[in-house]
Length: 473
Ligand SMILES: NC(=O)c1ccc[n+]([C@@H]2O[C@H](COP(=O)([O-])OP(=O)(O)OC[C@H]3O[C@@H](n4cnc5c(N)ncnc54)[C@H](O)[C@@H]3O)[C@@H](O)[C@H]2O)c1
Image (cartoon, rainbow, N blue to C red):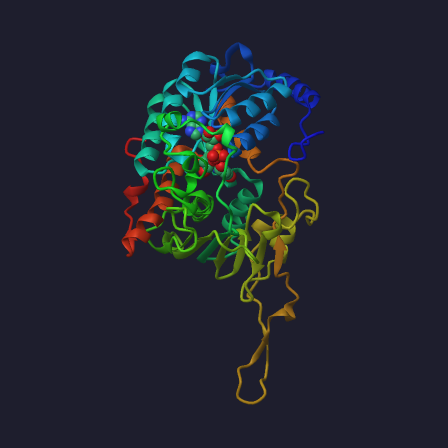
């Protein structure tokens, strides 16, 4: 039976698409990194460290990209390593399995790039070793559970000249790119952004367990830095291994605050606590407020992550300005742009450039160049005399102006991680720009990790611009 989550890839389609891409790229003018690829053409040899949930998702997404060959997989838990190896063999790859990443890096010389999806406290160790071994690295978010760890990763990438992409995949999502480049920046449909809110609300969940006969012996767990099997399975919730929900879930969205606003915050205040669970160390709910100094003025941005309630919630970011607001999410059902009643009529802008699909042009008004047109005057709302002493009633709908639309960009048959991996592979092959290089992810890591510090400090923390920069990188 085909795996429903993995429906598009068959061995036949993988092999034929690889072959086709090979022909096209062979004729293309290679620049910069092309020399590294040498005789093997465009094929990239990939290794994975950490074959758990996310390692498996990345592997499947990368299998959909032509010209990717998995040559090694590494995990300390045979219960995850063996299925990873099996899956890849099913697709005619021949990865060598390893428990120890150092042995893998020393033995499998042909590796070009490593995908790292281990728990956060291992990211710096694994990334720095792979970069020093001459490999490009795609490392999952949060970049590291410490600022020092994240800084060392940026420095090592700089020293070795190898690429470091961090797995904040929204930055390569075409819907997010369209929102940032077209809606917010080019068309300025939100006007001056004044506020942001964002949330990730999850229902109560049980701790992860394990089948006793597949437990890792304690001596081996200790060797790799884990206290016991419960912590090994539920590492997200423990201070030694990770930053809790604000870094597990909030990292994605707070990274988008920085990216969409083109700024880092100047201060943060936060509250939260371990109010519900009894087996965790990290706060199960956190509320934070940042101030962002942007070129248009200050933006106050609130964020909350909850792990005990999800009804009516979910996950999205909501950017609000004096002329409009935009709700955006990885969930396509939650993406919408709203016009503020006082804003100029959107119709010519929106219909020609933003409502129409940028790939097909479907819905566009022929010949109209909305960006060159002067913006229409402010709509004059009709004011009705009020009865008695109450306020006048303003009917803003009189203009029949369009006041909301869904962002018309979708991922098609790609999973949410594929475009970000493609961006990484393209950067290796063609020298194109990474969408989330280490130095930008470092600024996000500083922002995210500061929230837990603010909760502990019980006061506002101030940033200086230097806090977000790695010296010399
Ligand atoms: N980008 C996203 O949307 C997204 C989603 C989920 C998780 N993640 C990130 O991916 C990473 C992994 O998360 P997960 O949910 O897959 O966790 P997981 O616990 O399911 O998997 C981690 C795997 O790493 C292995 N491992 C631990 N120490 C190791 C070591 N020293 N060497 C080799 N393997 C080791 C474990 O055995 C396990 O199989 C985390 O950083 C997490 O934040 C990202």
